[in-house]
Image 1 (cartoon, rainbow, N blue to C red):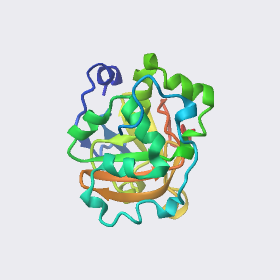
Image 2 (cartoon, one colour; image 1 turned 90 degrees about the vertical axis):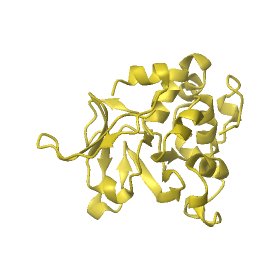
Image 3 (tube, helix red, strand yellow; image 1 turned 45 degrees about the vertical axis):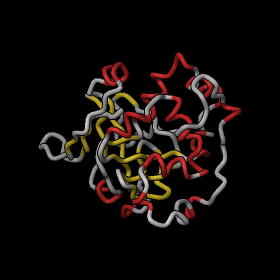
Length: 216
């Protein structure tokens, strides 16, 4: 899908196909899809939380039935995802995400964002670079529910004609990485999708292949 068009109209397709062609049988093909925290234009790296205040294994454990809440509500409820929540709001993606019936969110923790050089992160937070921030966050969204088991059956996700996010399942599928980001806690079910908590920010890379990690 043309990512430029996505940035212009903020529309999100709810269609996707799983790989299965003779030409490329191990590619998950998706059309790229594209929490209120800090007002637009006032975010800086000094206002973002760059540490996890909760053990990753404990995330959402005290929530009871997570399927009673939607994806964004779960993101907002987790102290480890406060930076992600702020950036989703900063990029004006809330309404787009709420229009999608079911989706998968690869959710970088606060410490994942801390891996990005501070000057680069500050640049992304500038209002004039909102389209760039939007494109990065859209790389963390699939417009359907995808489990870690389904990810293990593919070697990459196609985001556009020449942009891919590689998938690596490691030995015996024990450590699943997407775009160089390891899934720390997966398959968190929400009322409208699934969350996989990851340890790095996925940066889409043109012509990326399976052995070329692209995450920070």
